Structures are given as C-alpha cells and as structure tokens.
Image (tube, protein in one colour):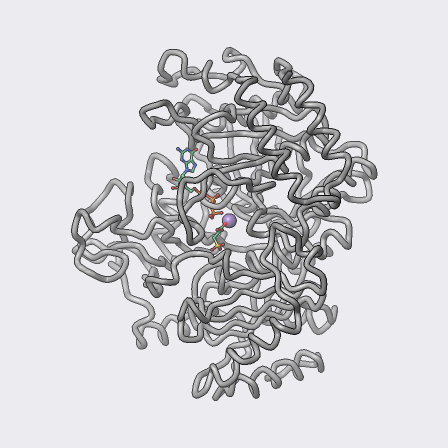
Length: 579
Ligand code: GTP
Ligand code: SPV
Ligand code: MN
C-alpha cells in the first residue's frame, strides 16, 4: 500500500488489522486490473461467461436473499435522532460503531482486501468529491471501475486535497440478519456489511453520492439529488439541459437515453447521467449540474429495441449482468426482451413457467457510460451543464397528470416534497404500494427531510434566476390496467412542451395544482392514443386532489416543529385554491 496520505495509510492498516485480511491490494483502475478481477471471479464461480455475441459480458448471480437495496437495514448515525429525521432509520454513532466493529472483526481472514480510490465527478472539477472504498469483493472492484473514475488519478487528487469519504464494505456471510448499511455523515464515513448488491455495496453511489453528499451539500450550499441529467437538442440546434428526479425503477435511465420517434425528426438526445446529479449555482447565478458517476447500474427487465434501443445495444458488449436469466445458447434473457426464450432462471435453475419471472425484476446491468451511443462528452466538463428545467415525477396509476408546471420555485419545492410513487423491486419490500417519496429521495436523503426542504426553499432567497420546476407521470392507467400514455421515446413530446414553456412560447392553463397544457398543446401527430386518453391524462380532479393534500399534510405533520413555515404556506395556498 503506497500513498503519501498518512491518515489514509493509517486507516487502511487499522482496517486490515481488524478484518485480518491476508493481503492489501491498492487498486489502480487499469483495464488489466479489471480483467484480473473478471478472471478471479470466473475461476471462483462468482461470474459466468456468456455467448460470444455478447462480447466481454458476464453474468453474476447474487445470493437470492441479496437482490435489492435494504432500506430497513440502512441507517443514518448522528448524535441526535432529529438530525436523521423520521425519514431515516437512526442509530447512535457509538452503538453503530460497536455493532459494525464486531461484524468486521476477522471478516476478511485469509482474503484480499481491495482499496479503491475513486472520484465522484470529473476528475478536475471543483464540484467533484473523493472517496476510498475498502472491500473484500472483486465484484465491487469491477463494478466501481465501470461506474466511477477509479484508480491512480483519484488517489492523486486525494493526496492533494486531503479530504475523502471513507467507505468500508465486506460481503460477510450474506446473512440478512447480519446485514447493515451505516452512514456517519459527520465522520464522512460509510460502513456496509453483509450484502454484495448494488447500492448496498457500491458505496460511491447511493451511500456516498446521495446520503453523505446531501449532508455535505446542505452545509456547503448545493444539492445532491436522485436525478438523471440529459441534453435535448432542438432541430434548430438549440440545447437544453434537464435534470429529472423519479424514484427507483421509475424511468430515469430510459428518459436519459430517449430515442426520438420518427415523428420527432431533428430532435437529438444526449445522456449526461441516469441516476444522480449534483447541482450548484455558479458565480453568475446560473444553476449547473454534474453527474458524479461514470457508469450505469440499470434495470434490465423491460429493455428492448422498441422501449430503449440505446440501452439494448449498449449492453451487448463490456457489460456485467446481475440476476438475469439465460437462454439455451447462453445469451442473457429477461422479461420483455422480445427475443429468445429463457432456459435457466436468475437463480441458475432450469426455467419453469409458473415459477415466477425468469430474470429477477430488479436484475441489473453495469456498463461504463462511454458504452452509451448517446453519451455526452460534456459529462467530463468540470463546470457541468446549465440547467434549463427541473422535473419531478413518480409512478402513479391515478391522480397525477401527464405534466404540470410549478408557479414558482417555492411551489416547485412543494411539488417535489409531495411526490408519491408506487414502490418497485429496486428495494426489498412490497411492490406497487403508493408511498411518499419526496424528490425521489426517501431512501437517500442523509438528514432530516424537514431541513432538506428548508435547504431547497433557501435557494429562492439567495438566487433570482432559478430553473422552472415541472412534474410528470408516465404511468397513468385505465381501469383495465392499460397505460394511458405510450411512454419511452414518446415522452419527448412532453419534454418539448416543457422546453417551449421555458422559451415562453407554449400555452398552459392555470389549475390549483399548477399550469397544465391543453390536449392540443401536446404534439400527438402519429400517435394512436385512444379517444379521451389525453384528456384524462391532462385532467385535474379537485376532489381527489383535496384528499391528496390532506394526506400530504398528515405526512408533513410527522416532521413536527422542524417543518419549514414556507412549505406550510405553499401547501395552504394550494388547499385554498382547491376549495
Ligand atoms: P433506478 O436505476 O432504480 O433508479 O431506476 P430508473 O428510474 O432509472 O428506472 P428505469 O429507466 O430503469 O425504468 C424502470 C422500469 O420502468 C423499466 O422496466 C422500464 O421499462 C419502465 N419504464 C421506463 N420508462 C417508462 C415509460 O415511459 N413508460 C412505461 N410504461 N414504463 C417505463
Ligand atoms: C436505485 O434503487 O435507485 C438504484 C439501484 O439506482 S441501487 O444502486 O441498487 O440503489
Ligand atoms: Mn436510482
């Protein structure tokens, strides 16, 4: 272990002593090292080769009890429970440290401990932040290589800056009874034990870039958000940058890589990020954003030529698949792939119809962002991109219209804070139940939501030219369960209305919840919508919204005296308008 950072050196040796690791390997992030990890995992059976048509692609089957994030085992550890808020599980830091210390004791005996330096954000960006993840998992090393700027350059910057987040991860024995994801924001520390899956184990992602970063962002005056970041270029060549927050498995990756349908000729989409954005207001008062990540850990099921051709092609080379099924000729397979038949399910058993889906509903791909044909080179711009509009959204089979616009920033914060969405397979627990998921950050905000909303509201006190805020819902259904809106590439039609509004050109009608387009304000050329679908998608039922606002108020009340007055004021304004 070679580093000039004395405190890093000391910490690594402390961890090695505690975990009794046989060997310490400092990762350099090279392609050779990546191939070495792949080789190790092929030998140990952690990875499986796939058909040669999928060049340099591999399959990993995680433990069947370890297939998604575990919100009930994820904690924010602060001296006072109020700091974590009712939105987080809380543990007192000393108790959490003691618990984790006991779990880590000897957990890497006879095994290699990998030390991964990584940079979240463009390596030379003032907005980027550094971290070190220590792990005993070669799967984590390989995934971190694809998803972050990892290795020598990151270590060099850590040695220059001195500040970095410390993350310690061990897969342990994968016993769900001994699984914890702990955050110590004041110590800039993450401790994860007992899971090898996604956001539980790839600590740069949700643990660092959202939970710890949101805490830092509050202190430093910026925002760390669960948002995709995309460029939309008009046929005239004008570029717009949208940041959109939807809950897990609610369409961020798909929107970020949107393929314009034939009817939308001349429009171009480029991806900056599919999951996380860090937003800052620059010296000129312009809100800008970077994507801290450098790769995608995306939902596989549902990906096909029609829904997302970009992603479909992107995962045919240099990808790691986790928990998909395979065909008889050893190609990865998943529900709605629309080609091939499953032979072996995600658990490695012969596939039988009636035994549930062949691929796990939360099966994922990992790829470097540069695999994406719509990758924007601006992803590496240290200054980030100027934000045209912020969009919130959720998965609501009822109520929420296709799109509406906030009256101003503070009303937009209320809209964000009021987001509710049906739960998905991205986290362990029941699927399809509506729960409140403010700003799509319920599982990811590293401190009390009440303070977080206060932080958002504070932007309108400090800055004048903040981007307008919108809400979208691609997931409205009729009584038979049919989606009213075709979604995917056709979502561009809605983005076009948003962009036209930002340009001051498009028409809208005021309603108590915000401004909506009329059906004729949305381009529906070439769409085969059923009679009345668009009207239903753009209708606001005041009675139902009054009920919704009662539920929102009850939720806000759970934050007691911490709730910002300005949010109550915004809530009251809408309630008055509704009655
Ligand atoms: P995380 O990675 O968990 O944060 O998810 P995400 O927000 O990136 O969601 P993603 O784009 O991966 O979509 C999740 C699921 O929703 C996939 O199965 C998609 O096929 C489906 N989906 C995405 N966009 C649309 C849409 O516009 N309409 C419909 N009906 N389904 C969609
Ligand atoms: C999410 O659940 O929002 C994800 C997947 O993006 S994970 O990395 O597992 O958190
Ligand atoms: Mn996500």
